[in-house]
Image (cartoon, rainbow, N blue to C red):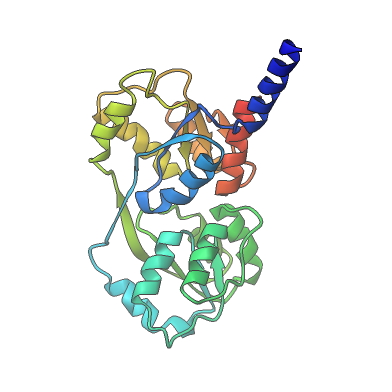
Length: 268
């Protein structure tokens, strides 16, 4: 009878255990953007450390952006490839001027657009620049398109649309820098196996490149056995260029898919 009680007790403990319990996850997003991913991971029992590898900073001059926004209604399409660009746009736009149509790179950017009171007309099936360009190319010829983006963004979208006959205006809304204040935090978390993360999440190519730049500045090397979780193929490519392979890659470029693939990895 006693062994039956012990087996039942063990089964109940297993049922109550969360899928990521006892796993440590390092989130490398900006602190403002990390909370959603951290919350999703913590709901599944993970111990989460947030150490940003990207810092969003103002551009030197907003004159080109402000000038374009004054002519907002003259553009056939307004494009956003990040939620950060939407936030800057929202702060600087004249609310009386409404864009004709808005296209975004993915659901997080679409959410940011809705939060400033606008609607999204196009979101591609895959949440990457290549898919956004592919979705817009058939309607691009002769169109005036305004792309609001980061200063160091890839040129996949404007190059494809220009080649398709569109007149593309590119304006920078922000730029990114290495957050030097993250170096002591990285030194602390990687100081021993007891604090070292089991998995590191990368939500963009920049988070990947910047983490390894910060590790180098901190005099650290990535310990073996740490899983590298990539949000999608572009981020995985950045890891390969750095000499690392993504241990796991999300099925789609979304936080929900990233958390799911991390859970499946440790379950298996």
